[in-house]
Image (cartoon, rainbow, N blue to C red; front, side, top):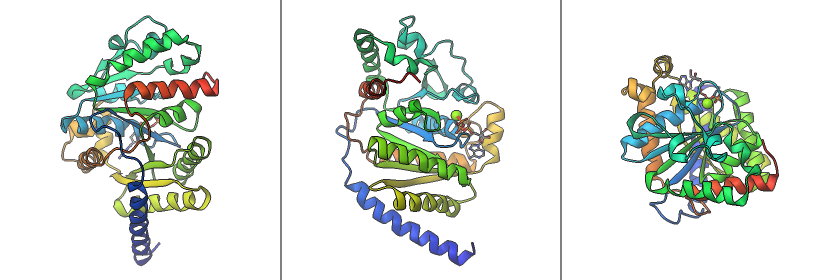
Length: 308
Ligand SMILES: Nc1ncnc2c1ncn2[C@@H]1O[C@H](COP(=O)(O)OP(=O)(O)OP(=O)(O)O)[C@@H](O)[C@H]1O
Ligand SMILES: [Mg+2]
């Protein structure tokens, strides 16, 4: 695409954004500003940068004075443990089978961030008695005081567990890159969540691009397909992260880029993104706290009757 065409596309994106913003403003505002915010970071395709985004955003939020917790629901290899140099011994599976208390499975990450390793624990909810579920819910309730923002690293794809985490969270950030398969897989996720579960609002974050222009092209491609084939869905472009060799370098050293190279291009973008998210009013339609997040997750699983 030539320069003039690209600029025309960007102007179209800007107009598109304005229209979307008007629709976003009509969505319900959160009921209480001091309730913890539960944000799922997800993607259709794997390997698009979710875990790095969760780790770096967590640190950026923490530096803004927020109490941050991560639910590590990504069972992949390059997970948050590596980025945060932690070695958790237990996971939610131990809480669910009654071996450990929630406080015992939480791991301490950098800068006061706490991590709950999900392990395969969340697959087992359907086997629990009502009494066991209530115990776990009340343990989660005790987290309310300790958390301003709970970030969920969901793993990729449209498997039922990923979808339930996204549905149960208050906000869902879908990460996409400019790879065509990443865009079509993001579309597939939006399609499943909107048509089967009625979710109509998603935040879009574009990773591993050259600049904002390229990021907006990705957003535009995705929103054009969504607009054409899915009714009543609002996609909000929330920003981009550049392809940054320093992020990879930090990863090799088992560190987030924001800790190791604070003046790197991607570190600046992570800070700006965290700032914008904190400033933007959260919009959700439910109670918006951690206990209710877990309750919603359990309800989705029970309704599906599935164990995976
Ligand atoms: N902004 C970036 N700049 C350069 N490289 C990046 C960037 N973001 C991610 N990467 C690279 O992409 C790889 C995948 O990132 P990451 O593990 O965070 O993705 P993921 O979406 O969590 O993957 P999975 O779906 O397997 O859980 C990393 O190893 C890193 O090298
Ligand atoms: Mg990951």
